[in-house]
Structure formats: structure tokens, C-alpha cells
Length: 334
Image (cartoon, rainbow, N blue to C red; front, side):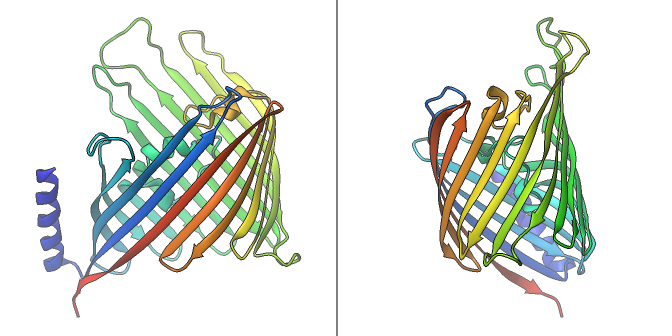
């Protein structure tokens, strides 16, 4: 930890001499997630904690930037340092069309992945994308590609990485969106006859319509399509297990009060980091009711109550999130 802070200070003073602008950013995120799951399709648990991140950034010009910082999640009931901190360290190129990052940074800063692919409880403890991200956008198209190096191979750890593409295109009120990913779970450096390479792939294709200009709501849309997954354990053969399901989303919101629904029916999926409801059920519906009592520029607080109907069994979940962000320039060359 001391070496990290020494490195950060050296980098900070170097940027003061070289960069046009040096700035700081602080983010506080309070998390409450109580899962009353009794159907045995998902893990019942209560997650309460605080996430704080601080970073320094240096801009040489209007499009090039390097940031360094630290992110830490303290889960209530644990001991300080029980969960390791996450490093923030990346280079960024950003203009009105292209967005490129290389390093380690918050995944949600650049994209939102469906819960079927990355579950929110996994994301609480693994918030960073470590690798490459590139995005392109114009008035009607938004496309992203990424490579996330999750685990470096060692004598005890498997080599693991995830890669994917996602995006959406808008044609007036019609939206077409796509999320595709692959996850490779290789062996450890030490050979083990009972450990085999695993491969996971999947995709979600949706076509939707935006009703927000028709209905008196801030957000109003319906999307429907197909969720597919492929998985194999090479110790059992080279053939993939294929699962397909119908998938529909809708959201209605006015003044921070809303309803969001997800309806999935079909085969049991295999997504390595995905929500277990999708891998353990053939019929899964989720209804989220939420209110946003705090909705300001730098502060956002949301309360939610979710209902999960899994193969006819009803579970429920209460969530709370408080996000506070601020930052400013530390020095600027004229």
C-alpha cells in the first residue's frame, strides 16, 4: 500500500509539470441489498457496505488522459482490509465519436451488461474491467468492444478472461440492441488431471420501441428478443450445450418513480458470472418497483423492491443505493 501511494504522488507531481490539467474525482456509493430467496434457485444473502473511490487525472490535451487511484468496498460486518482494494489505473482517449481505455477501471463507467451475463452480486465485489475497451457512437449507433482479463494463470489460479461486443442502433422510435460475450476458463499452470478447460458464449438480441414521446412518461419502452447461451467442459467432449429462451424487457418511469420488468422463458442457461435464476429455471420473471427520492447532479439515492417469480415460486429483494460524486481541477496551465 505504501508503494502505491508513493507511486501516486510521483505521478501526480509529474503531471503537474507536464499536463495541461490535473483533476481529482471522489465517489461514494452506499449499497444495501437484502435477498429473501427461499426457492433454492438463487443464494439468499444480505449485502451491506460502502464503496469509495478516489482518483487523480492528468490531461495533456482535450482527448488524452491518464488516471490513477484506488477503489475500496467495505462490507459491514467484515474487518478492514478483509476485501482487497481495487487499483484504478488507465489511459483514455475520448472525443465526440471514439472512446478508448486501456488499464483497470470501473466496468459501469463504460457499459451496463445484462444481469443474465454479469450478476449484480458478483459485480459488487468485482467492479473493475481490467484490459481494453473501445467504443464508437454517432447520432443513431452506439457500439462497444472489450477484453477483461479476470485472472492471471498461476500454480493455483486458472487463467480466465472475458471478451464481448455490445451496442444499439436507433431508427426513430425503434431500437435494436445486441450483447455478445465469451468467457474462457483455462487450467492452472500446474497440471491437474481433474481440471478441464471450460468455454462459455452467449448473446442477447432485442428489438424495441420507445413510447416516451407518446405516453406522458420520462421513460417508456418495450424490448423483446432471444437470449442464447453455449457452454462446454472439454473433459466431457467438444460439443456445446445450447440453450435458447424468449426474453422481454419493459420500463415505465415518471419523476424518478418507476417499474421495470424482465420476462424470460425457455432453456436453462450457462453464464459463468450470470444471475443464477437464469441457469436454474425455465420460467423466470422479475418485477422491479423503485423510487428515487434523491436525484440531483452529484447525489442520487434509490430505493427498490424486486419480485422474482422463478418456476412459479415467489422470492423478493429490497435494494438501496446512494451515490455521491464530486471532483474538480487541482491545477490548470494557461
